[in-house]
Image (tube, rainbow over all chains, first blue to last red; front, side):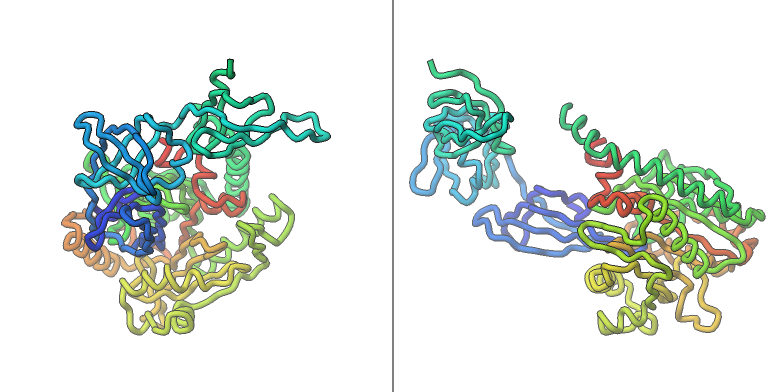
Length: 188
Length: 308
């Protein structure tokens, strides 16, 4: 593909390795040749590389396929997934998962991006439902504005929630921001 | 789409400022006797430039600048004209770029690029005075002292000091563009505007060469807050020389990209009737960014390529 078509999150092959474009900066004097400054992240070991391309240059796009998989369990720092059509199992490492581990629950269906047969990234749903396993009472302040407090979710991740949330409540969470959206069901 | 409504609500103040800036720009030029003109956006031929890729439209081109038609007006005895027009440059997308953007261009006769740079100083100072009654512009955490005159620096001195070579005596297009972006621009004083002057003759484009030094083109560029804001020429009025430069550029484009660029006959004809004149192109989106303290072109345009 032409360097002109590369955008943030394009996946490239460079020096025989697969990379995600984490950041693409376009620099161009009005009458001059454009420069593309890319911050690449290795899709296998998460190492980064800064590299500069010029307009007119070509790069190899990585051929990525998508497969729906179900998250089964964690073993060491490997997250084990099952292909829902072939029932084959594969794993994704903790460094590849990034902060998605905060929202991943056993049995969840996710999209796994594969480079040939190798999983390199996963996409989790924008909204997930997670139960509160631990929360205290809100700290009283002098103001009358809405009070927030911290709550620990079943994945072990803590978020800010409104004061009325109780242990056992099921919450809707926005995985893009990690923010509380609403309470789905209160504990009976 | 709540995300779109939220995004547009967030930039509403900037868009209100933008409209006010457009009014003030028009007031500035009308007050100096300039005529506002409108020229076509879709044309059969544009200036061939190897580093500016045009967008095509049903066999014609969307303008990359209104320059050719504005010069045809100058050749027909229009003395002072200005225009704010939408221009199009393929693939140009980033913090400071959108493929569709707004250029302010003005031209006047009996002038050279020193005069149009001085117009730019007056214009920007007037805007800052009217909008914030101060000579200090605050942009992205940097205070910029806008007092006139702005700092002038020749390309030769800038390159000799920062990049260690002289592009005026020894031009290399690739090295020039690369060093300009990676070495020269980052080295400019962020607390003052800078005007780079005396470009190498090989980077003259549509500018005439200096009468007493043919290695140098009468071309100047304004940089503020790390941004290239405006590009001025003392206009080339030699039709044969202009045609030769266009043909050379067109053959390079054909060699590199396999694309045949037509050359505008009426424009070449107009060049032979051009009086001594100067013109300048100023990025309106970037001017608005500076005056609104906006980090990105997306904060001063309601709809850019990514949210059309």
